[in-house]
Amino acid sequence: MEKKHLIWNRNAECISREDLEALQIHKLRATVSRMYENVPMYRERMQSARVKPEDIKDLSDLKRLPFIDKPDLRDHYPYGLFSSPMKDIVRIHGSSGTTGRPVLAGYTNKDLKLWCEMMARTLTAVGATQDDVVQIAYGYGLFTGGLGAHQGATEIGATVVPMSAGNTQRQIMMMRDLQATLLCCTPSYALYLGETMAEMGLTPDQIPLRRAALGAEPWSEEMRVRIEQLLGVDAIDIYGLTEIWGPGVAFECLEKHGMHINEDQVIAEIVDPDTLEPLPMGSKGELVLSSVGKEGMPLLRYRTHDICTLTDEPCPCGRSFVRMNRITGRSDDMLVIRGVNVFPSQVESVLVNIPGVTPHYLLVVDRVDSSDTLEIRVEVTEEMFSDMIGSMQALGRQIGEKMKSTLGISAKIVLVEPKSLPRSEGKSKHVQDNRKI
Ligand code: ADP
Ligand code: ZN
Image: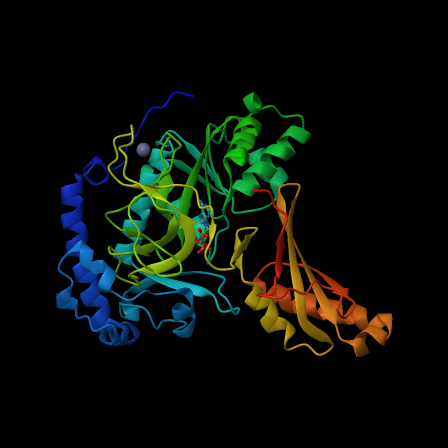
């Protein structure tokens, strides 16, 4: 397919680096003051770090600011990190957190407009115009994917088909009947759709899709090639996280070599995940983001725990924003299973409260028919093991229900004999990820 680079907001996206830095420092300073004044936790953190808002004069002063991490959001659940009064908050989104409490973000009206623009830029980079019919198969709800893509596509003036996730046969029917040209969903769901179409005997030229904007979970170049073949599209990587904005933080253009970060709204750093020292451009490390354009819940130096590299090499599309390459891993133990964030500590927190089981467990993650599966192997106690089969089955059901409500996804529960799971000498290994992504 030809590469015709469309740009939504040339003034912003092709800004000179000099002007961008001036804009970033201006917004950074305003956000530091906003958080210092309105968020008690942040004021205390800055005081402990012995830094005052007026000390932040230059972008290089960013490194003097304290980091914010996921547990901070959990500890101040639900509204503790909001920088705007509730009367100005018009939307809440969230994703699963570490202990069953969701990680929440609040948006003001102005925030929603900015986010909308970020997603309009994203979908335009993917090639979307008002002539497109955009089928959105990201979930709608607290998850940022559905509504995020919806607002951006509406802003462009495209025709939006808000399907939400699931119901694959119906998705395919609608896609054909409505002549959808752009698909928005997770890469694993795109693959599943493609495989289902192939099973139905549909070839890529029988479906009108031309592009797919895919994100919310890690995927590989091999997976891109498969999806492109199966659906006959350009498959484009998009990145975001609830805490910062949601989708639209970064997006690939049709060059498909790294995702441009919306740097007028988000300042990106790469740090060493152990020492937390900032690393030079091009180094591999943890991505740290500051959402400086935001009112409702801006965050400064938020640790994404996503491992990647940045590049400032010019891109043929003309955008001046730096690019981040694919996420190659995490600096914590978070897993993304069917687009849902899962931490082994959540599993542990469920198990410690159930009599008859031990805290020895193993999460086995796999990908079957393009869909992620989660099996949780749990060691039962000696007493339980010598008990009747009947109580074991009831125990399995009880664990399954609790896991579903804590993790937000269902898992197959396998109860195993005491002392049968592998023991390790150092840090115990709780995850076996068999997915090849
Ligand atoms: P969302 O799933 O809407 O992006 P969440 O807050 O639920 O937001 O999850 C964010 C996490 O999902 C990111 O920190 C990252 O680990 C993962 N993620 C999102 N987009 C991508 C992507 N394109 N590639 C790899 N991982 C991604
Ligand atoms: Zn580009």
